[in-house]
Image 1 (cartoon, helix red, strand yellow):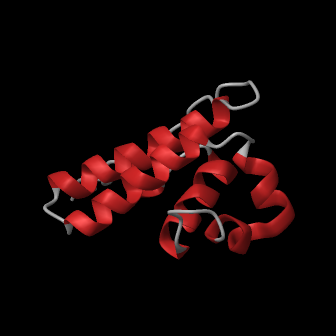
Image 2 (cartoon, one colour; image 1 turned 120 degrees about the vertical axis):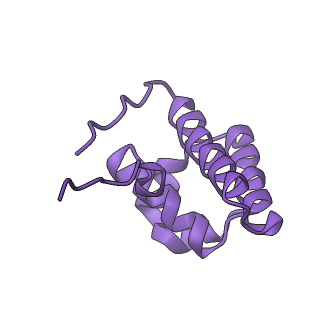
Length: 102
């Protein structure tokens, strides 16, 4: 299992960290030839989170997934990705596949 990345401290540093993970996910989707709509959605959500004037964690803590979905550019799938990053400092979709020697 991979060690979680260190989340930067600071008022909005965590927003930048979450946005970076969403950008990484957009890049992965692009490299896999996924729908441009999906990768663009992740990029737009990342851009929005970077410009958010308040930390995203309290929104999640107070209002849960629905609070995140109420934000512009964030739908259910992206809200779940944000929650995973906030809860674990990682996005499992970005983890390299496990290779089992047989």
